[in-house]
Length: 443
Image 1: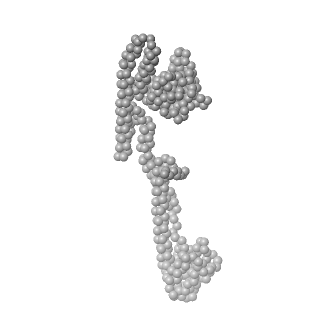
Image 2: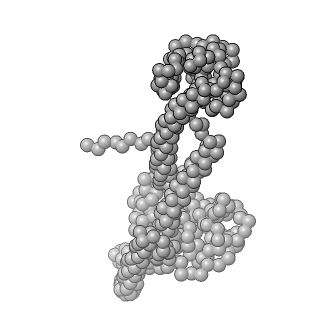
Image 3: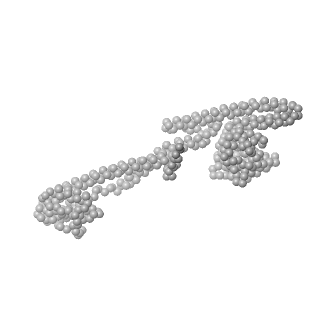
């Protein structure tokens, strides 16, 4: 039982996006964990230092004030003040408030206990909560001479440096940049391989990948180049066999035609000559198909496509065949004219054979030039549009040997189009008929 796979909409479709998400997400998570552990360790260390400093400073300050004459104690208070606690003489609280209630916060109780323990039993202490947010409390101490004093404490660890968020943002930026560079380095060879695979040609004249870079990339490039060579050798051998057989069949077919023509006028004589004509036509088409694979050996030239198609259409009009031409382009293109002429001529012949007329249209489309050949014939079922490009494949309902079809016309056009770097697509027209589109890249 095949269980359908669930496709999450939020998952990126491209490998580069997925690798970036995984790598950057992993780095950011690791960075966040490291920062969290570092911040926690810093908080623990700062809290421990705060408690230690409080214990030592309070003991020193209280004993110092206790031994000073009462009239000199006020002069020492500013020097004994710290960031988190300060001292005052008398019973009152700072800011004119009241002493507050019993201690509520855990930190306040812990710090008050440390102060009481550090001062010892010789100093009586009493702690009161002043505020909860921010946390603040006061410890009332009675000196040995009976004079009261107040220790005002506002617990807080050392604040973060102002430059720390900027450093963190810089680190995150470096992490994202490194992730992007790593993904680009990893996916660029795959993109180059995909582009080269799309441009593979049966004659082996496609893009050759440079065998360079990391070992895995170099091995993949070398394997791809070797695959192109094997495909080219296979195609060459197959087409050479087809061309040889087709060529060798012409001689016995010609002898059979001569013998049939010398026979008496019998009904079988005409049928035999018709069969031999079909065989000879099929052989010639086979030779043409074999030779079409070598269309790329023709040297590319700068071509005025407007005049080229106008001349081709006029050749048909001179023989009273209804072919029309519409549209123009603004600049010449670089292509192989003989191969292109055979492609367009095959498409026009196909339209004339099955529809009686052919409409040729030319126009610019972004970075390509498009030639369309349409007819109003029976068309082709959508399921068969791709198969009619295969050699010797015919639609028996409309394209059979009675109409002279061999199943090679569109195959030859397709192979020649690939050899000149063009694409050939068939589609049914609205209202009936077939349209063939040849898309030529500008060069």
